Structures are given as structure tokens and as C-alpha cells.
Amino acid sequence: EPEVTQTPSHQVTQMGQEVILRCVPISNHLYFYWYRQILGQKVEFLVSFYNNEISEKSEIFDDQFSVERPDGSNFTLKIRSTKLEDSAMYFCASTEYDRDYEQYFGPGTRLTVT
Amino acid sequence: GENVEQHPSTLSVQEGDSAVIKCTYSDSASNYFPWYKQELGKRPQLIIDIRSNVGEKKDQRIAVTLNKTAKHFSLHITETQPEDSAVYFCAATSPGGQNFVFGPGTRLSVLP
Image (cartoon, rainbow over all chains, first blue to last red; front, top):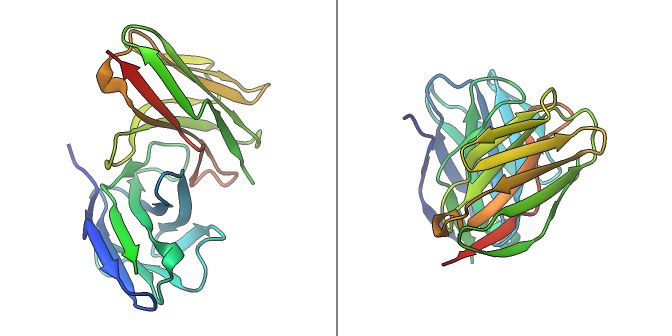
């Protein structure tokens, strides 16, 4: 069964550094998402992406964040200048349809900002 | 925007007993309600979902009920097994229908 994949599984970075988290969605999916989960808390929506543009974003997704689909397979989340509070698990998800359907989650990237 | 609440936050049951987790949502326009199971250190995985035109759905030991009037939905797990131990998240779609708003999660422990 196809799965969403993410790299790296764990990223440690210093405060103020830029990080890029990578995702490969399921190949026939058209809608992509980033969520984050601070340790022990709920999963929170960051951004959704379709047709090479952001379709929706949350208040968390400020100017420090950006997303890109640089080629036909990868979907990336960039944090320009990391803060301690950016430490979390970041999940990529994808779905075949635009609304009201199951989203398939990747295994996550654990980001630790020191 | 949508707000999802979930109760209880922790639940311990004896193996073989039933477990019920309840969620409420605020936006009457939400039409899709998935339940995800997350084992420690793993990705959330869909276990069952329900759409607003259906009141109940069952898949083997798992069932979900939806009351659109009251804006609440519940997960029922019967004949619980130790491998059911995990954190369960309910979710509802946002007003735009594109992203999920998750509840805070319920940590279920099934005691042997």
C-alpha cells in the first residue's frame, strides 16, 4: 500500500537556523498538508496546498514558514529562523480529494530546536 | 472557526470491556468526522470515519455514531484488546472542508 514518506526522521537545529522538512506524498494525491504536534498535545493544522499554491493556512503558519513543491514528487516545509517553540513533530499528509476525505499521514519529522 | 472537544482525556479499561470516547464540535457546516489512532512515536492512522449524512457506521469491533443536531460524535470499541492501547484523536473538517481540526486526544489503556 502506498505511503507518505518524510525525511529526515529527526532534525536537531540551533535557534535562528533555517530548516527544510521534506515529504513525498502518495503519487496520485493532489492535496497536501502540514500539521505539527507539540509533545503530548494535539495535532494542529499548519497549511494546505493544491495546484502549486497555498489554499489555506492557520495562524501558526506565519512569515517564518513557507511551503514548496519543487518537483513532481516532493513537498517541503521551510522554517526560516527557528525558535525554541518550533520544537515539535511535523506531519505531512496528502489526500486524493479536496475535502471531507481521509488524509494519509507520513511518519513525521521530529524537530528539536536548541 | 471549528473547535473540537474530546472526553475523557485518559481512559483505562479491562481487556474485553468496551471503551467509549466522545467528541463535540462547534461548526454545524462540518461534514466529515474521522477518528485517528496514534501509537507511541508513530503516525496518526485512520481507524474509522463518518460523514454527516450517516448516523452510525461500524467496522468489526469499532463503531462511530454521529448526532448532527447536538454536534457530537462518539467512538465505540468493543471487546478491547491490549493492542488497542494508544492515543485516539477525533477530528472535524474545517469550514472550508480542506483541513482537519483535531480534538485534544484520549489516551486509552487496555489492561490485561
